Length: 221
Image (cartoon, rainbow, N blue to C red; front, side, top):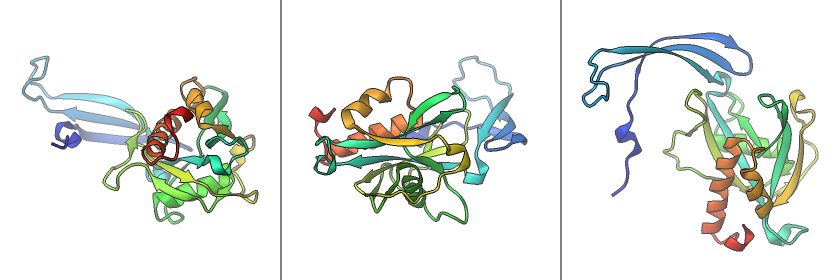
């Protein structure tokens, strides 16, 4: 029996939504109405309304990618399987964080989410001609970033590729750097408090895929 996640989804009715701030992200003032349903814990049969702050990136169609760039032991100087990681400034914590290459979908520029993955690999990881593997099914609408955010994550794995230095990064990425770490080192970093959540999820999905396909072993973790 296949579990149907959508069978238990309960939604509210959006009765009003207004963009109250927009720069890189847009902040919406959203009012949602919920109809009383049988089995509600409160036993209250009245309709309820709540106001929420919701954020998202409409210019990116509320979709973004995160890519785990993998390098097999046969191609690395260390002789161990490695990932390319990126160090960049995190506005929220006002500190350096570690991420995997990430970026938003842009209408008119990208046809597919895989196009975004290829571009971000080029710009942030300085890699071209890698094999691109989508880590969720085609019927998956994307992974929710957080409960108050409209953005959805599309995680990818890249395998191999050639190093290049011709990519131009965005102005706010002036202090971005990239480096390679072993799979074991990345696994330790993932839960150290310095890696962004989308990169943790993508990293774990990538590791699961690599294990299933024999590209790494438990000993590499």
